[in-house]
Image (cartoon, rainbow, N blue to C red; front, side, top):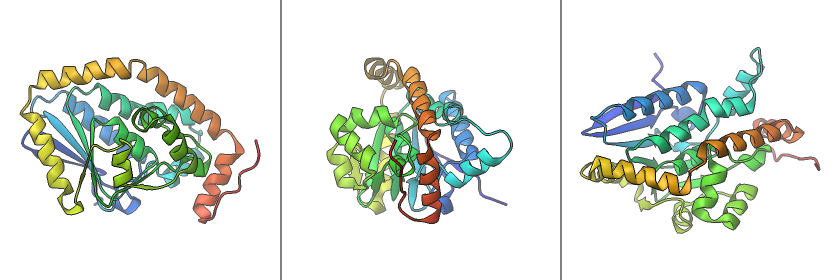
Length: 264
């Protein structure tokens, strides 16, 4: 029997959720997206959960969209629009994390890329292993950052550095991610899980009302139109997906060669 795509473990009043597709570097397919949405909904309504930790099994937090799964989805009967796919999946995840008035701490080991990075940036606090690496990767297949990445990345790193990372898809290490504000803390790789759980447990000792209302206040101050922006971002990704560069980028990805993009 296959392992579930999302593992749930209670550590006192901390709920730890583990993305569990290690053979795919925890790339998202529809099953894992739906499982995480369901788990967040349950956590929001469970008074025994006072903080959440999100992590990935194996060598990665998440590398984002499972491109093979997306190709299968597109080739199976009625093609799915990219904007609809984002709205039902990644944007729904981002909105639930920001609306959840409990701390969501993400533990980042190995590689975090694509929507995996957007998801991490949507969480409240990011703790990274000292050997972790980060990249966007969207530009390599002719797309733009999605799932809120085009909002959160410049919010944390500043417009110039965000554009540089989005355009080049360069991979950066944990020290650089910390320097530009993408991660809050760095821990030795062998202490990452213990450090993350300890930080989450510390937050459970605080007033739940104070934590939740503070998060709501910060959302109102900095992200008052998040839902509208996510829809606008999804529309831009739809536009990008309808151009020839996506086809070339995907083919190059599967053929393990550099893409050759045409002038637009």
